[in-house]
Length: 342
Image (tube, rainbow, N blue to C red; front, side):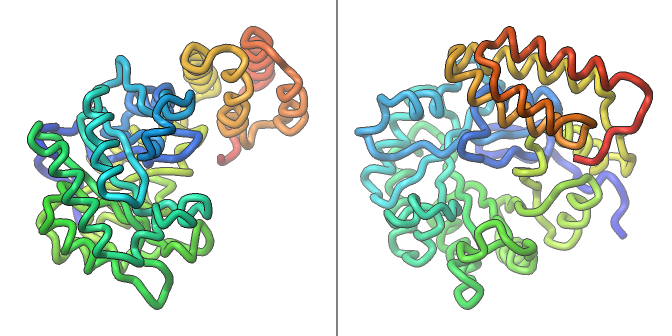
């Protein structure tokens, strides 16, 4: 078994040296700027935005405007773009760099039907030629400014077509700076268990950083995946929903082999309050109250009385009502007791 720390020199993406190797996965409807900021505060070394559409007709919509908003964000500022047309992807990359993005990530991993039905996301893994065209077009559009272009993909389209190693070789040759692999095929969606053999095979053939993603939900699992695959970093998605402190726990374990305790309810309450206030400011009161509900549910998962509380929460219509209700809920949790696992 490898000794700690598991890594030596810091990892860089292009000119950007990262504070650690524990990353936030881009998740639609989750990794907005307030969430990314909190994760970075609590130990994430890097975070990628929600995917933004490459269709210029959508750039002025509220959804895309928010997804491409990096104002005041801890650097480096990374935006993920999705699409299937090389020229449109290049235009989207240029647009986002002009708005402050410092790294462009190409989405070739999303399994959602509405994305794959337009030949984007993980559907692109069926057409490696188009992937090369997209990579070359995007690098030509922003490479002159020294903007790194990265790629996130799955292991293949289905179990019979795990072509990620071939795509990784092509992407590296075309100039991709880093590749993240989710250890599932598109057909798997989020079912079953992630497999890491494909990630290990890609790492063995690659000279650029390779990031492992999929089912990493604890410090021990992160270390296990790193040792098995040889990956240069890990990316955490669903396991960080409502648990943004998982990044500092994983980073500390990778550095020392020591497990940090879970935070006390008072700490969680404070982080949730900070998150919500930033969330309301970002979305406005009407939208913010409604989109905050899922985050609140994730934070409170496993605490006594949360099921009944969520029914009350969904009827509240203002930030003040939400914050007051949460304060009262946590006040009932402060008696000495262990927090159930999230």
